[in-house]
Length: 188
Image (cartoon, rainbow, N blue to C red; front, side):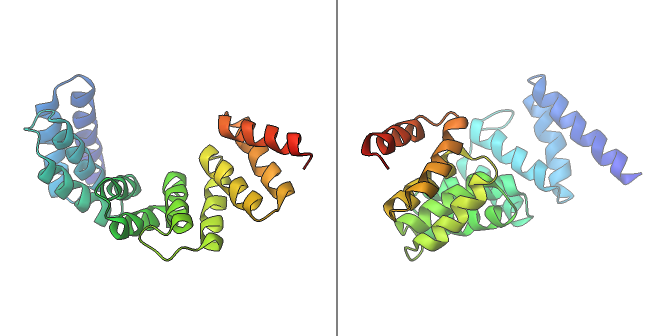
C-alpha cells in the first residue's frame, strides 16, 4: 500500500510541475524527500536551482543534489560532477562521475575518460581513459566514439580510429566526419 501512496505523491509532484504549479510540486517532493526518495531530492535541487516554487538558492540546490547523489541517484551524481567541474574542483567531479560511470551513465563515462586523458583530478592515464571512452562508446555516445578514435589515431592505430570515427559519423558527429576525411586524404 505504501508504494501506491508514494507513486501517487510522485505523480502529484510531477503533474503539478508539468502544470506549472511549482509550489505544489515542491511541497510534494519535500514530503517524498523526507522519506529518503532520491528522485524527489534531485527534483528539489532543480527547483532551487531555477527558483521555481521556491526562492532561488544555490546552497539549497547543492544540498539536495548531494543528498540525492549520496542516496545513489545516478542523474544526481552526474550533475554533481558537472557542478564541481564548473568550480574547477576536479577531484570531486571525478569522484561523482566515477560513481555514475560505474552505474553505466555514458555521459559520466565520457567525462571521466576525458579527466583521465587530460589528468584533471587524477593521474593522467590514456589506458584508463580508453577503457572509459569505450564503455560510453559502446552505448552509442558520439563524443566518446570520436574521443576513442582520437586516442587510437594518436597511437598510430588508424584502423581502430577509423572504426570508432565511422561509428561517431553514424551518430552525426561532425568532427568524426572531418577526421575520416583527413585519414582518406592521408591515404591511411
